[in-house]
Image (tube, rainbow, N blue to C red; front, side):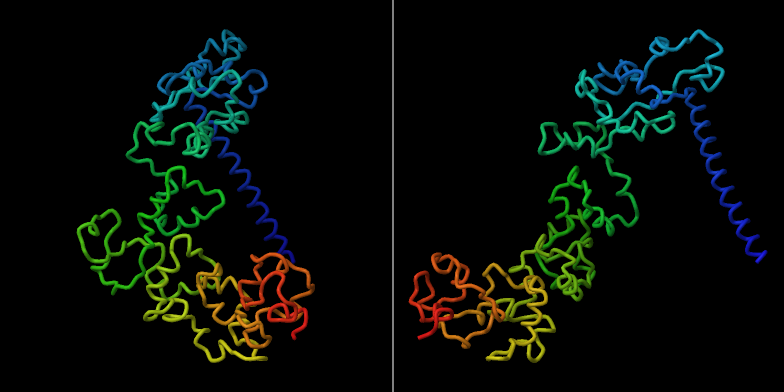
Amino acid sequence: MKLKIFYSAFISACFIFLIAGSSFFNQNAIAEAEKDNHIKFSHKLHQDLSSCQDCHVPATTAADLKGRLLPEKEKCAECHDVNDSDACGTCHTTDDYQAFTEKKPSELVFSHLQHIDADTDCQICHAGIAENEQLTNLANYNPGMATCNTCHSETKLASNACETCHLNTADLTPETHLTANFSRSHKFMAGSPTADCMMCHDNNTCEECHSSTTALDVTNSSNSFYTPYGGQAIFSPRKLQKIQKAHELNYRFTHGMDAKNKSADCQSCHEVQTFCGECHAGDDQDFALAGVIPSSHAQAGFIMLGVGSGGGTHATLAKRDIENCASCHDTQGADPACILCHSDADGIKNTNAKTHTKGFLSSVNGDWHDDLSSICFTCHTDANARPNGIKGIGFCGYCHGAN
């Protein structure tokens, strides 16, 4: 018991020491940084005493970022007694009383004069600056690309061309793009609800690597690939593949799992009727009816016909997840796979594959009585399947009693 108390006290002491040490070193780091800049200043303390334009007067007329945008000593003297030698430590961190260290000139083209007026809130771009309490992290309050993009985009008046704001466009790669595994992990960033890829990229950028016009039907030898931007494909009559693809090279054997789980939207890049048809097609047949098919489709009893058969396994799968069927079969009608059996051309009960569950029709009132475009007439096509049909015959006989 005493040993447990000892260890608990020891761990608590270590924890308190780490917290205190972290705070101490953090304060020291801030103090050292302020010493290097010679000046200590709190925007938070001054925000209620004056506006940004009152102190940063040069910024209101600055047409570029080359000049000094910070307040001069004379501006501070309007409120502070700069001649009081006992109060110098209020702002200065050293005894030589040097001015705030200017940073190297910016490589951006920007005009404060063009962007601000008397009613401009500086925090629209410099968000959070009013809460800043030291001069060690001012760069964190400069606007990022996402802020600029609210106005500089294709749908707004301001241009989004790189050279509009950047003096040097040779290397504008964001830090997030410089990680070693970016090419494999960028899909997570692109799929994020807050993704901002379109600030710099368009669909053509994606298609430079994510080509989706053809299936992998070559031998995948070392001569079957070319590097992105390499140019080999331009001079070669052979069908080549880029090394960097959206999917791994064995994806042809596993893509069915993604399609079944709906974890990937294949149609965002691929045209089902043409792309899938390169593998899933038989000789002179529709790709949905021949060629490579899911293993469930090849099992005995997948399709069963006849009264009381229940339709077989495919009926169970369709009821369980019709969207899975739609990943290959066109539910808009271009694919005839379903209506080959699920149709009623003769208007006679129990002669066609059952589609509706028991008790499906709860009322005799419906649009089929007066609308020839009723969805019912998509499958029910006997001669009497129409508005104002003859009661007791064909389609109308299902409810009104067959003659």
